[in-house]
Image 1 (cartoon, one colour):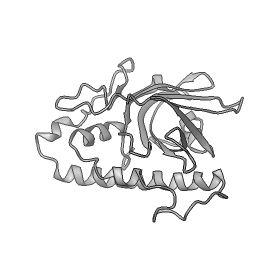
Image 2: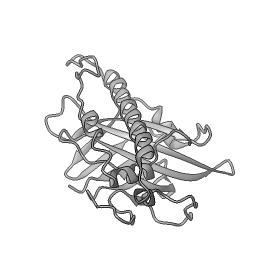
Image 3: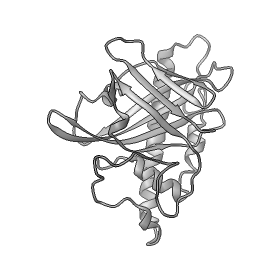
Image 4: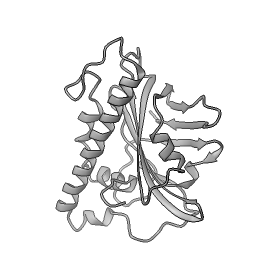
Length: 229
């Protein structure tokens, strides 16, 4: 997945204090200079397009940070980069708040608790999950690296799910969501890839828990996140 930013990359960049520049982008609201203004008559489709554009902007910024970080990384900080050995299939999922990486500081206790489609446990295939800090307006990003079997082959991909606070929310409780996926080879059968093609995805927050579900009986998504705040 050359040219992509993985969850392991984000863990490393976060531990090196390189992700501060993302906050301003994640906090950009509808109607900012990045977007055309969304008014009360705008549809969910309009917000979907704008959330996707924001996610693309975030991904571009992360790639820029990664490239700049790699060019200036010192020998000591290079020890934090993930090794080249493949992680065993039965190894536990790591996250930004739970990885045992020397020298890192736990910033939050966010966890991806459940991620399934049609009963298939996607979370079980995730090797690393990174959840960004929650912005003042409630916006946050979830990134995951996964490895799974499809058509008798081992596949790998990285997904990014942006949860952007809806402009008409009266509190931090409702989100528009957008997903982007980078794959080692094109696989439209991937449930995560299919998620990236779905429109008008929304999530809701109750306390620390953010949930996202679909009503489609042929494509049943269940996603649950504990923001740990």
